[in-house]
Image (cartoon, rainbow, N blue to C red):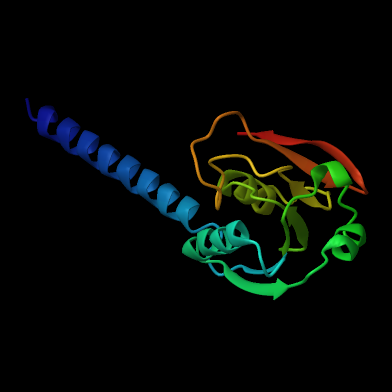
Length: 155
């Protein structure tokens, strides 16, 4: 009978360890972008881009906003194909990020650091960060690879 308290104590310790590890993983996931610096290029008249900036800042990203009337030269410079272009372009962690890219895709990009130029979410899908409305379809985030588009992640 003396083994019963030892077993209970061991189970409690294992449970506490599991909770601690899970809590640490969740805390780390939530702060994955904290402290990053980004530059976001947008039109002075675009309101949804401002909402995307607020979303990034809430994740702990330090965002420098550059207002430009014509983003076309920038999109050519970063080789963003016309079918992937959106209302704003961001540079973060050495990558180009085009459009209202969700948090999970940004985290995947910066965690895995693939050999690509960046990622894009074409259009302005409902429910993405900075865009009103509910999510109505899967978000197909594309990889930018030397002027070409390849699948990156579907969320």
